Structure formats: C-alpha cells, structure tokens
Length: 160
View 1 (spheres, one colour):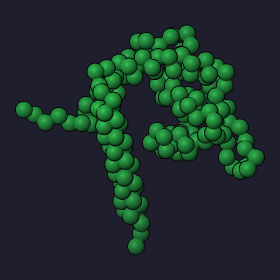
View 2 (cartoon, helix red, strand yellow; view 1 turned 180 degrees about the vertical axis):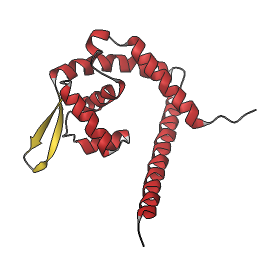
View 3 (cartoon, one colour; view 1 turned 30 degrees about the vertical axis):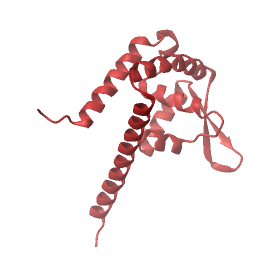
C-alpha cells in the first residue's frame, strides 16, 4: 500500500473546505469577499477586543510583509477595513472592520459554525484536541523550516 502524503491530503482538504464555503455562502453579503479576505475578516472579528496590526496578519496567516500589505490595501479599497492611527506609536496603523465587513463577519460566523460541525462530525473531544495539537505542531515545523530557508538564502547572498 502506498504511503499517504500529508501535504497533499491537507491541500485537498483545504480545497474541499473552500468549495464548501463557496457553495453555502450567502452570495449577496459575500460578493466582495475573496477567500483570503474572509479569513482576515474572521480573524479581525475574533480579535475585536484588542488592537490588530498588519504584522499580526503576517504571523497569523504565515504570509510575507508584502503579501499582507497588498491584501490590506485591496481590502481598504473594497471598503472592508480601515487603517486607524494609534496614540502610542505614529508608525502603527490599527486594522478596523467597517460596517460592510461586520455584516460579512456575521454571515461567516454562522456558516463557520456549520463548517466546523461538518469537519468534526464523528470525532470525540479527545480526537479533536489531538488533531488540533498535530496541526499546531505542523505549523510550528513549517515556521521553523521557513526561517531556516530564509537564513540559507541570506547566507548565499553574502559576499565574503
């Protein structure tokens, strides 16, 4: 029997999740929202009690500074988020959801609950906890791999 490759399996699951979300989404409320925008709106909605900045998106979603900047710029243009100055650091801009984005967040929350029920159907509480631990460990492994790769690229770029 051929060994299953976890990366391929996770990618396939991600694709299935995206298709599920697209097939159940309330089209009118979610027209202006791409998949990535939706994840960011959900994250900002969950973090509403604290200030969130672009660097938080970079960490949360494992994206580069330039990717986060492009996504945030587009979301501002779509009227989904605003950048607000903070009193304690003139360099920082807090990311804040607009009313339009809050409407999307409410729809996404309801649909997200359905997605979670579908994903975890038939799993015990201990299995869910174990799966969550495995996923967190895989993410940490990938963070370390990305950091090691960046260090190797930096060393190759040095002139001795």
